[in-house]
Amino acid sequence: MSDFQLALTNTAGISSVMSFWVFVASNGVKKWHDKMLKAASIVMAVGFVALTLAIIARGVEAQRFPLANLYESLLWFAWATMGGYLALASAYGIRQLGWLAALLAATMFLYGSWLPQNQQTIAPLVPALVSYWRQIHVPPLIVSYAMFFLSGLSGLIELYHARRNVSLGLAIGTIVLAFTAIGLGTFTAVDTKWLQLLFVGGSLCGTIGAWYSLKYTKGEPNLKQVELYDDVSYRAIAIGFPLLTIGVITGGLWANHAWGTYWSWDPKESMALVTWLSYAAYIHLRIHHETSAEKLSLVSIAGLLLTLLTYLGFNSLGFGGLHSYGKFK
Image (cartoon, rainbow, N blue to C red; front, side, top):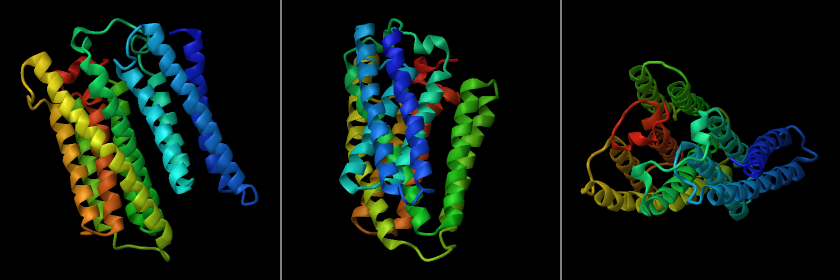
């Protein structure tokens, strides 16, 4: 990795951290609240531009499309998260989602920086990835994942404004538990069976508990903000769902080219299908108004957990399969 590329990547990472703290600090300074929110968005925009240049520089240095391992996918994920937030903020005038988007991007930068050096170093492609399908199949998936995360984070804010504090607490705890399992699976030697139980069991119990706790409210809900973040969550899914569909279809075409079959029920393939079905269900429920905004927010949060499992879980939690060439331990 060249010094120029490293400097750009570090600039983007530092910008995401700075943006997070400015967003958080704005809540305690009413006089400068709006100006600080704008400043935080500008700092994130600087990080987005720096990361865009870093990805381009990595591609030039590697002389290939710069999306071939986990480290590079994390850069793309952070890029899509920052860009997705900036687009949604521009369209809806929202700022409260900013600190969560910045925290997510900073977490991915930190996660990537802790990966083994052989992940960060530019290296020749493994044979399974030497294909023009890589740049067709993978980018839509990564961008869709980022949009699904933004939708799930919007769901958390929606629960906050709906005053479903118990459900909100359970949802946050479930997400933290899921990320903890991913981190332990990446950087420790904990038995993967226990980590799988932690992720899957924790996600199921937390989501179900949050669903049945929706009846508990504290205070008067802010219906205007609930409606706003319900729409933001839906729009993020409306962007991510077609991209995931493209990713699944092109994945089948690449699989047929590489392995002679369009679908092999590989664990990661199967999980991508489950994720697709979960968002198809969300869109159906949203369009037909068959459930409340608060319940839809939990569907989007459940989708976030499924997306996390699809994206990072199969490498760090030891599920194996034909996609195990991406494993880094």
